Structures are given as C-alpha cells and as structure tokens.
Image (cartoon, rainbow, N blue to C red; front, side):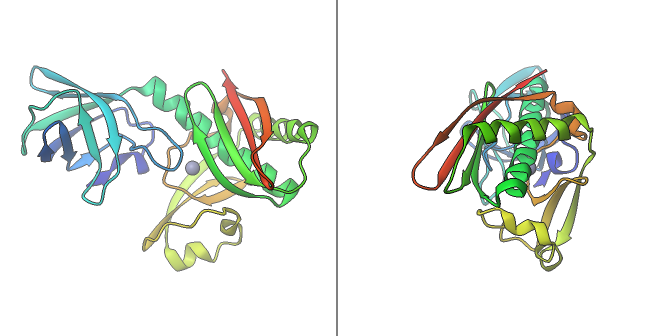
Length: 233
Ligand SMILES: [Zn+2]
C-alpha cells in the first residue's frame, strides 16, 4: 500500500489496482485518498472502473491498508480503477491543517503550552492545548501573530527521517501526543516557524492559507483550552 498523499498532497487523480474487497470496502495497491486520522477528516471523491463510477463515502486507516468505503459493492481484486479526489474539500483541509500547525507553534512559543489535540472541519477547526491561565484577548493576539506568519509566505517542506534522528530534533517534543511508533518518521517543517512529526496533508506555502479568523476561545476543564477558527479566502 503506497500512500501517495504523503509524497504529493496536490495529487487529485491517480490510477491503481484493487487488491482486496469486502463487500463495499476496497483496499488498493496505492491511493491518494487521505483516511480519517490525526484530526483531519477523510477525503471524498470517486473511483472509476470502466463505465462504472463509485462514490467514495469513507476512507479509514487499518492495519491491512487504507480502506475505501464505496456507495455499493461491485469491484473485485485485480480491477483497474482511476481515483478522483474532491480537491476543493481536500484543499480546504490542507489549508486548515497547516493553519493548525502555525497556531500550535505560536501558542507554544508564547505560553509553553503543549497541544493536546485538533479537529479540522470544513466550516471551522479547533486546536486544544493545556494551559492553566487563559486570556481571550491574548488568544486573539496569538491569532494575529499566526496571520503574520501566513502573510510572510513561509515554505512548507516534508522529509522522512529515521526515528532516532527525528526524536533528536529539539522542537518535536512539544506535542502532548506521541510520536508515531514507526521506524521512519515524517517531519513537516514550516521554514523558520515549526517542525512536527505529522502524517497529514499540508499546503506548500503558508500564503495559501488565506486568513485565520478566531471564532471563539473556551475553557474545557481545569487546564484544557480550546480555540476555534475558520479561514477566509
Ligand atoms: Zn500536519
């Protein structure tokens, strides 16, 4: 199983071969469909086989590979298919996901707070972090700072490093979440801003994000804070 979105997050169309089928669930030899994981929703789109077109209604990670859930069964192992990603939806997730990295980096730099989670949606996204004292006015300053970074147009790069080498990078410890238990770790670097272990999809340049708009900031328990944001084009 080759995860094509790890190498090129702008790959909206690809050809593949069906490897396994369970009713309407299909595993391909390679895919550009991003599975629901790491706070980023699954891609939507279609698989085409001959004259037949199947809606991809869900994409899930599994030990045996990425499972594409289709609107109906019919494919069989060995079938050649073409995949088409709903690029408008995915591009929005890429922009929001990259915005989460920037916001997390600013919150960490300004407060030392570790990031405990994030959830991306089409209309809004959120970042959770662990912090005792909390000030909404200050939070909106952090969002402004994040917008400065967006406007500075920093390149976003990915590289894959052996685990020991990745863990030796000083900034990687900021996430409260664990670095994945893999031999090779994918590092996503926003030049001059942030470096994280991440298997998600990102834009190539922070300028593509547009503008981050804070919707609200709230307390979720003693040291749990949450900020919601949306993106303006
Ligand atoms: Zn990421």
